[in-house]
Image (cartoon, rainbow, N blue to C red; front, side, top):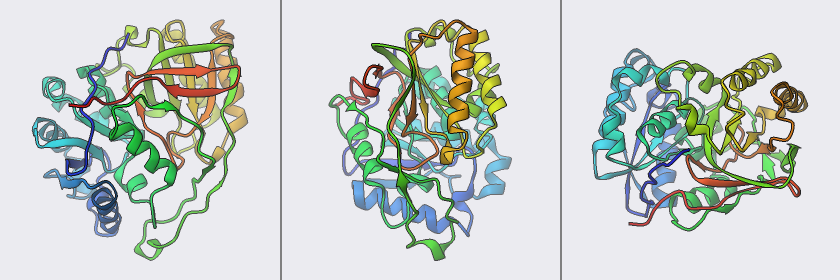
Length: 347
C-alpha cells in the first residue's frame, strides 16, 4: 500500500523551477514566446518566482541528445532548498532515458511539489519510487500558458491543491472541455481555443462507495515503464484507485485492450479497489474504450470492480491535479469522485 511523504504547500513569493525532462521545445526560438507566456502567468497570477534549470531552454536537439543533463537538472532542482516546486515544461516521449542518472536519495530527502502529465508520468514514478507524492497534471506550455487566460477550472484546482493544506474534496467534471489544436505560433497568442459542453462522470460498473490511494498516469507511458526497475512494486497497488488516461495520439482500441490485459495478467486488478479513466482526447473512441474496459475486466472476473469514466485529467483542457498516494473516493450510486485529504502539508 502506498505511504508517500507529502511535500510542503506553495505560497506566494516561493521560487519554482521549470524543467524539460522530455521534449525540449520550450527553448526553441519559434515556441519560446509560449514558454515566456506561461512563466509570466506563474509570476503574475500565483505570485511565484520562476527560475530555469541550466538545460531547460537549450532546445529540442540538445535536450533530446542529453538525457543525463535532463536528469542533472531534475536532481539539482530537488537538491536546491530555495526551490519549492518543479514544473514540467511539457511531456514528450523519452523521459524514461533519464532513469540511469537518477539519485533516488536526493528525491527522497527533498520532498517538494512536482507537476506534469503525459510523459511526465516517468517523473511521477521516480518520485513514487523515492517515496514522495507528486501531482499529475499541469505543465507550463499547455496549462499555465493557455492563450489569453488560464481556464477557471484549472486555476481553481491549482490553488486548491498546491496552495492549501485543507482536504481537497469533491472533484466535479469540468462543464466544458477542449482539445482543439491551435498552433503555437505567436499570431495565435490572443486567440482563445473553442470549448464544447462536457458530459458528467459515467459509471461503467460497480456499486457502493470505495476508497483507495491514487496511483496511475498516462496509459502509453506506463506501458513504456513496465518491465523496467521504475515500475512500482505490485504491493503499491494494494487497495489503490488506479487512474489512467490516454494521450493525444488517440491510441487505437486494440492498444487499450492489450495494455489493460497486461494489468490483469500482472495481478493488478486483484489488488486495486477501483479505476478512474480520464476523458479520451477529443472524445475519440469514447464508446469503444468503455466496451473494452468492461470486456477486459470480465476476462479476469472483475465485473464488480468500480470503474468511473470521463474524468477531467489528462490531455484535454482544462484539468484538475491528482496527488499520488492521496486517499480518494469513488461513488457509484450517484457517480462521483473526491480526494479525502490534502495533497500538501503546511510547515
